[in-house]
Length: 187
Image 1: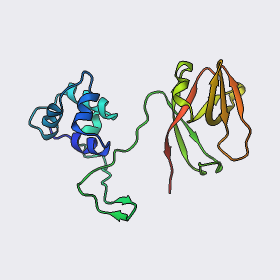
Image 2: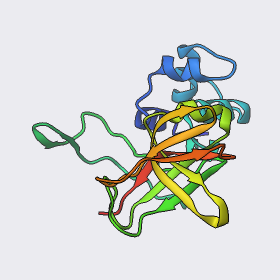
Image 3: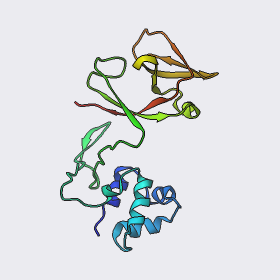
Image 4: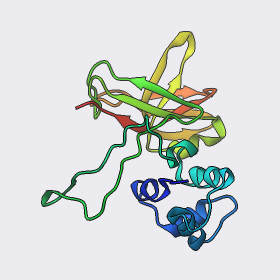
């Protein structure tokens, strides 16, 4: 079976060692290299382990005739756009379990109208992970607050709105919050 393990690994900017350590249970970089090159047969179990380590679906590691690849044709740096040194692909984003989205209808702060903000849902015991990150917090009657989490004390979350000049909001004991993890913007 021909796999795309190498292309996806490079698109994720991971080394063989990074993938080997991220596997559960961990394995060796040599094993990952053998699976990439086809020297060792790739089983469904290995595909699932490597896909989890790379943060993709197992189907992303196998060639499909219906899937359109997104080749990288240039790399933009300080000196401008140049051709990549090696062939690579971009892995399209996929929603993870528990993610929610927020659509921006009017430009505010760093966000533009039409942006999609993908958020990872967090339970109250995980709120500390979102400190100094933008979060979405549910309010009664189907309302929400969105802003930068600047403080957390005694079950209260302190948020600054994304636009300039807004006042800090305090939310007591929200049942969950969603931390912004990906911005999807159409140009």
